[in-house]
Length: 355
Image 1 (cartoon, rainbow, N blue to C red):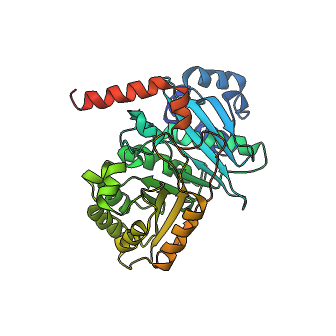
Image 2: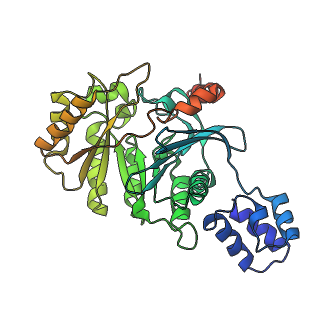
C-alpha cells in the first residue's frame, strides 16, 4: 500500500483527513486483502482509490509449507515481474517470525548462499519489504495468530539498501499501524562496515546480526568475498563501536560447513576474535541446508562445536532448523522458479564493472 499515493487521491477528491487513517488501519491493523474490504469507505470511493492505487504491490506466485507446519515459504512477483521470497517460521513457544528480503538477488556472492548465484537486480522499496510481513500477518490472522518477530535475513544485503530498510522498519514499528516493537526486529549483514556504523547512530533499538561463518581471515575470504573489502579487524572495530554506542548485544550467525569451519582451530579463532569481551556477544550456530557446493556439518559435530565455544567462554546456542523438507534456505525457491532473475542479476553485475 502506497499511502502517499492514497493521500493524493483523497486530497484530490476533497475527502476528510481521517480517511487516510482509515486506510492505514485497514491495511496495517485489520489486514484487509483488497480495497473491497475497506468497509469504512463507500463503494464509489473504494472504486476511485482502486483505480489509482494498487492495494498490494506483491503477488504470491508459489507457496511451500513444511510437513510439520512450522515453516511456510512464499515466492512473490513484484509489479515489474521480479521475484523475491519470504519465510514464516512458527516456533514452539508461539513466536511467529517472518524472514524478509531486502533486494532482488544479492551482489555479495557468498559461495554457500543460493541467492549469491543470482547477482543483484535491484533494491526493494520500503513498501515491498513491508508487504512481505503483511502477507504473513494475513495468513496468521486466519489462524488466530499474529507476527511476533521480523528478521531481514532473506535475499539481499540490507545495508546496501539502508534507507528503504530503515523506512520499512519504522513503518512496522509505527504505534498507529503495525505496532511491532523494535526489539522484535533484527537486521542481518554480511559485514558492511559503513552500514554497521550508520546503524549504530539510528534511534531504533533494532537488533543487529552479523553473518560471520569464519573467524579465520583467509578462510572467511574464500567463502565471503566481502571479507576482502572489510576484513575481520575492520569488521570487529565497527561492531565494538556499535556496542559502545548502543549497549546492545550483537548476534553472530555461524553456518557450519563440513570440514571448512567446524574444527578445533575454528572454535579457537572465534573465541580469539572476541578477545574475552563477550558481554554483548552471542553466537548462533546453524545447520547448513546442503547444496551442490557444500556439505553441512553433522549433528554430533555441531553439538560438539557449540559446547567447545562455551568451554572457551563464548556464549553460543544451536539454532533450531526450519523448513528442511522445502526450499527454505535463502534464495532456493527464487533460483528454482526464476532463472531469468539470475541472468538479469549477472548482467547487472557485469554492467556495473564496465564489462
